[in-house]
Image 1 (cartoon, protein in one colour):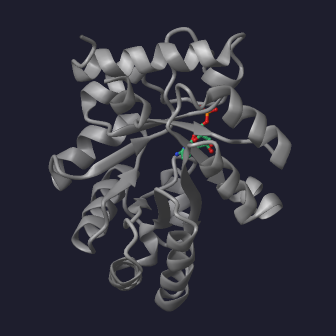
Image 2 (tube, rainbow, N blue to C red):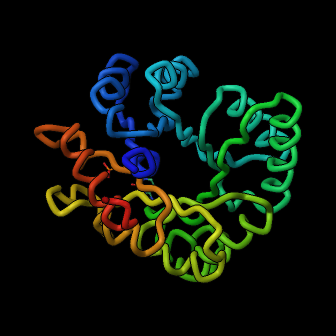
Length: 245
Ligand code: C5P
């Protein structure tokens, strides 16, 4: 039971260096199944940091948000598969050709190498973007229109899910159905501060709304007892899933 909740909790390794990342993995891996490695940490440390997480028994969400010509994204995705990451992501704004080619090449690679296919997620519209951001790059649609549109495009291109704010979960579920992963950052348990997150939801509400997994950073890292904070979030996830027997 605990394992199922643990696999739905992703800790954001928002640190600059290898040893800080390793300290967090050692501290948290009992209660956290996945660790998100983003652009800062990966640019600094490279694949070594992915292997470090795996050596401690953790799985990696490689959050590099690929967005390039189809061939380049597909080739980068194959490198992510070779690293054995559990999840990686791309920008859905790269379009269906980019996403389809990535799915096709990743499928071929994983089948021939006999390895598990990573979960492929698409980012729709970054939560830092507003209608004004979209307008200035020539997109005259609202964020609320673009998010489900890009989620559907990702699904139709063979992607497994999206990264979305908790407030967008219902919108995405409506167009993409039950069998589509939704990974949500911007989660704040009631015991944590809001920090710079504006549109937040508790772990309970995010899971109840249909989120598949939660990305959590500061509510864990800023807690006086981070492992205990992660444990409390696991309990919330278990409660929301009805698996706390
Ligand atoms: O510390 P906090 O829980 O706010 O960290 C959330 C993590 O999720 C950070 O790594 C942040 O960059 C990421 N993220 C986010 N909102 C998005 C996409 C990613 O907060 N829309």
